[in-house]
Image (tube, rainbow, N blue to C red; front, top):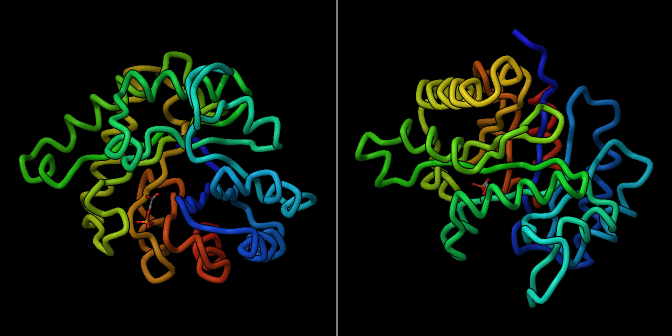
Length: 248
Ligand code: PGA
């Protein structure tokens, strides 16, 4: 199997004021030489100061969303180039909260991933089934459709990470069974292979949805799970660092 370096990313969502930068500093100081890529995506308001806070450490900082265009009349939106300009290295695209709250489609998510690449950012493309889709037995079909629709041609291990986040597991404390996670990740890798051939073996697939210190070791040990996208448990440096340790 291709060696895939673990990757743990924190998604702060709409949480964090300047007073929270101490958590970023604690993570930056705490990761040391961990054999794991570590990133935090704070709200856009904090990206610049977070980059400064993390400077000199292995912690990278990213955005939670970007517009597909590089500039223009799009009030309130942020271009991937603006995240890069602040020193950001990655951007999450297609998070289920964006898909739900803002009606983002697979085609829009794909355009955002292309924008990330254009700006030299790593795209973290999120996919995942809803509770109703899982109950209907449609999970694997949904994941294949989202990989096909949300991930641009030209995807490589260097420009993209996939995050599998079952919508019903986000922020709920619920997680799929270990067998279900393994099945989903294997299916996603197969869908990536249909798109890219052998490159799929090198592309990292993160699990996200209620990852916390108490379940991280078990989840991160699963076949084809190459790291985690962490929401709530990324807000406190001590919890996040425990998850990073579990990944290494
Ligand atoms: P959670 O969020 O860890 O709070 O469930 C994960 C995410 O939405 O990325």
